[in-house]
Image 1 (cartoon, rainbow, N blue to C red):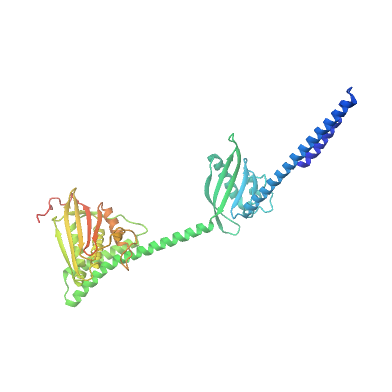
Image 2: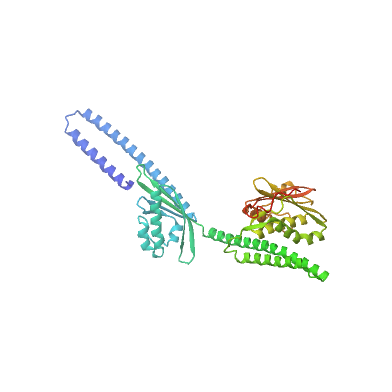
Length: 430
């Protein structure tokens, strides 16, 4: 009860008490000395009660003043926040909202206190759907009986679409009844815009890197074609084997370009059985010209007559070309590349490609295979990453051993395909 009602009520009650006690004493047969004593005691009681009342009133007034100051500080704080802050009672009626919220929902001149979202929707028709959605999400928070968090997007009269990170905190009495609800909405529109731009840039970056990787793969067969064409021009003779290789390389370029065109809708890969020797012979012939120019010798040792491998032939060609090119780049002043094929237990084949190049430091060796990590000035760091992925897709493994000053060994382990030509192959006696 307000102090403006308590004070008159106390004065009225005091006057009634004094009058009634005087009337009661006057009807008693008491001596004047006794009456005087009673009046004195009554006076002191009145003074004590009055003093106690005014002390409590003053204390209550100070407490109310402190509460008003605290409420003012809270109002100043929430009004200074660049977020939507709203307090509601257990029935969903608005108790207090900050200035940001009133401006956001165009409620500056609306007496919002005591009104529900559905009622406020009639005062701000533009946000009617937003208010009705808030009513539903409030109910979900009540039912969840815990803090809920969600993103809400809606358009404002300026035409801009705002996105808010909304947190709702339901409050309950000890008996479980609804007490109130606090809703806090942070404007994350700029953050979402920045995230969208960052995602777009990331996609463009990936597309650019992918295009660079594909261009790198196209350059390999183009280099081979150029080399063989230069040889035929110099010798003025058309070599059938060179022409065959050129046609095969052109076919591979056509396949790579085709893969580029269908990136948005990847097609099924064509897995089939093929002879490993055919692939290794083909790859060796491709790099033979460049090896000759760099004074690099290629040695080929096969401890397995002609094993079958099941997979995508062109992808494995890509793997072997990448590894051989890395070996050639590690020996710009000449050296030796050794290719060894050996049988392993559990029907597996091990292909080892070794070079006598400068080798790789152990610290860098640990990072090989990570996307975009490369030791080359002009490389993208995708070759070994792609090669490792291809080998894993063929249920194999790729391992690299290297020592500075001695060279590098690349071990590729692949499963044998036993169903095809199993009577035509077997361990060699070499």
